[in-house]
Amino acid sequence: MPVRIDVATLFPEICEAFMAQSIIGRAQKNGRIEFHAHQIREHTLNRQRQVDDYPYGGGPGMVMQAQPIYDCCAAILQAAAAEGRARPHVVFMTAGGTPLTQQVCKRLAKEESLLLVCGHYEGIDERFLSTYVDEVVSLGDFVLSGGEIPACALMDAVVRQLPGAIKDLSTSDESFATGLLDAPHYTRPEVWRGMEVPSVLLSGHHANISRWTREESLRFTLQTRPDLIKIADSSGKLSDADRKWLRANGWK
Image (cartoon, rainbow, N blue to C red; front, side, top):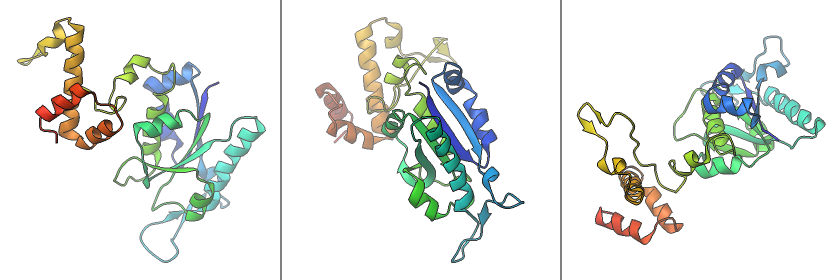
């Protein structure tokens, strides 16, 4: 049975265009996922299809009203119940949520159905969020104009975890799969603008290539995300050889 992903948004065309491309598009064609975007404005109760209003207490910008978002999501949940499908796990995308990590993506990939709610303007009426949202997720410590880009990022990362969506070996070696960042990659030609491919990668010696890849992964992670080294060490993902190499290269 395909994983179903619904998105409640003011801009369904953004998500629809994204979901039709590349790995996600192929996953839909292969029956791994089922995707539906829903226009929140279709659930307004006013002729202008207005979904926002001024915030109580003052302040800049406008706030999305609870009613149209609730009615949109309620229709999605009711359809799931009527069709005998699992209740969607409701996720709201906002800068104030739990950081989106590889582990979060792996967990969400185990859900039978996801409903992603995309906010806009200054935010969404808290009465909807505190009552009907199961999880709040953030793409990072920055602010975007809406939740569509974070939703697309989450969908891409989640779909990659689904069996059959991508070659299993591709995801087992990429960044964060081992607790570290991925090692550098090279392809043809062997020399480009005077820069050569590391000779070990041309040697055909699989043990040496494997060790080089591991050490480069350690080097890159130590340089750019030393916090991940600490996490990998505490979770038992570093070998004695890893620790010896790290200490020789400045890790304390």
